[in-house]
Length: 360
Picture 1 (spheres, helix red, strand yellow):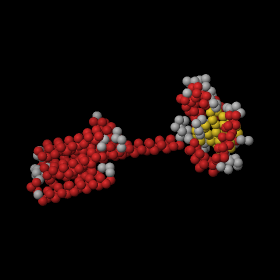
Picture 2 (cartoon, rainbow, N blue to C red):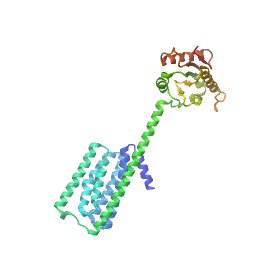
Picture 3 (cartoon, rainbow, N blue to C red):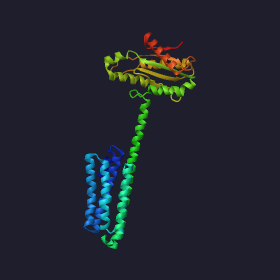
């Protein structure tokens, strides 16, 4: 379908300016093509027909040049100049002047100028177009003999048909531009949403990243720490796993651990899980007591040790970690708590791994 190809051409534009250009160009071709047919049907003279065909060919040539060179902006600028200075004013004289529907085409010419992307050049285009038409109208009033008068019946028909064609072209053009702008907006919103997601998330595991977790801890948890407990844990002998099975399998191990962390998080209580480093994870629990929270932390450790991998079923992954009560009065700052967690994690590894050490 032609409309599908046109839509694809418009949407495929790299910038909003390109998309708008192709949409406007298509409807300019439609309007000039329809105007050419009307002029030929009404028999408004050879000059009018030649100029209408010339306008149609001009837009086609501009489109081809823009497609081949990528100079969309300059092609649009030149097309507006040619249309409003060298094509429509002569057609005005050859198609009945004020007694015909050519005036609608003049409005369309100014409308096309107003869609130009650059502010100063847009103003210049509109100014040139207005001056061109004002000079044309002045010349037509001073020298009415220059106007190729047409039959009143044909003039009435020309008015009706021209108004209809310009209305359809204007509606279709604006509708397409609204579609382009909406498509651009939805793409921008999707990109912003994606960037926002990855600014907070680890791209591999999809858990929260270190920066977001620290900000969350500082703004949401630290002011009211009561009831919150934290565990930091790292994968045991991860380098050996990667050396033996490869980096891709290492990524699968990290994702498997992340899935356990995410699945054990209770929604609605402020709990949070994050990838804190290359092989380190951190998890925030909310519980009524330290014993309950530590039991949940132990369950996370056990669930990780029971992970199975289809491509290497013989592999068993363990983690070592540290566990603290966030409301401990000794933690005068969150950085102090994180340093204690690091020490406990190292202590767990030194004691044989696959265990969680708790601050006494």
